[in-house]
Length: 114
Image (cartoon, rainbow, N blue to C red; front, top):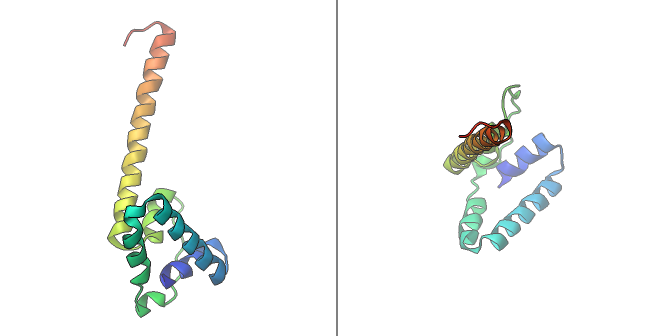
């Protein structure tokens, strides 16, 4: 958990106390909305090792990096990678749906039948 606190203080420019309160609020929210994940959420934040408490060096963000690319930075490990992949796939599917709807609506209003 300390690793996440460090990242929040660096990237969001908030104090460690504010970061801790934010994380606790998010944990409580997730556990309230998804009770079946409560144990996993507790385990994820309780498994912080002393090595994880070391501050993370600030790296310059790439200009072409999107929010989707930063998910795995905030959520460490394989879980973050899976969430990032899921979010990218969902965004891609949403684009496809939008394009299909746009094509059908433009066909409807232009007189084309699709």
